[in-house]
Length: 260
Image 1 (tube, rainbow, N blue to C red):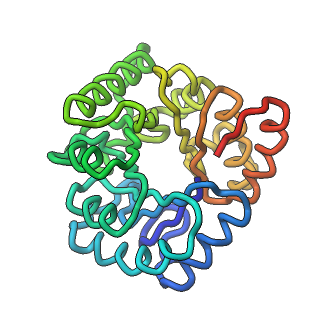
Image 2 (cartoon, rainbow, N blue to C red; image 1 turned 90 degrees about the horizontal axis):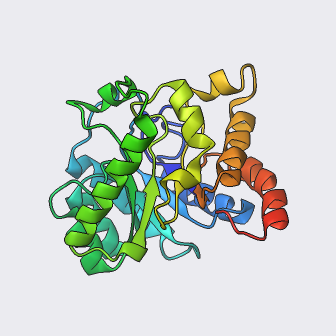
Image 3 (cartoon, rainbow, N blue to C red; image 1 turned 90 degrees about the vertical axis):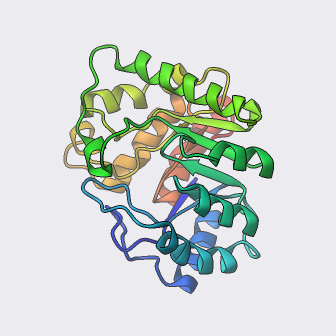
């Protein structure tokens, strides 16, 4: 899954892809490099980021999706936690809703169900503000707590109409976890499966400097994606598709299983 941030303030590439033509060109380049999903986001979740209103988020997304959807031949995911934003994107033709808030927003699960689109449910503590999710209060049983919360969110989504087979789970690496907890999550992806696909998203996150001290951030991210895939992740969400695809090709050949 290749990341396309159309934000001015994302933690690693803010402002790089806000021009529509540049954004679409980058998305198509990522597909050529091996991405089988493009994930478009218009609100940063970096530490200390300021919330973005739905109108502004839609203003950023609309022109990019209008230009991208007719020319890209892989599924397009939209990274949003707002029902009204997801509704616009799905109506335009987006295939997946990637919700860091776990489909908690009123109407979000119902929207995905009625539209027949896939949904990615991520684990994230529910703080007063987005910046607070980067301060961990999780204890020794953190992995069991995350799995239990993902199961609860999945059950809630199914009760609201979602087809269980249309759900992907994300343990939320980097959101409210310590570096040590993030490393554990990375290397135990299958623990969270519960019979569903698992997405791992560690690309360019701070804990990688602890895991791979002194290493270039994209090489560290590619190595982390390989660790996640080896531990059972079905999808890895990354900024540098070319570097990651090179890492994963050998694993896919050895295992006969396709990671995306």
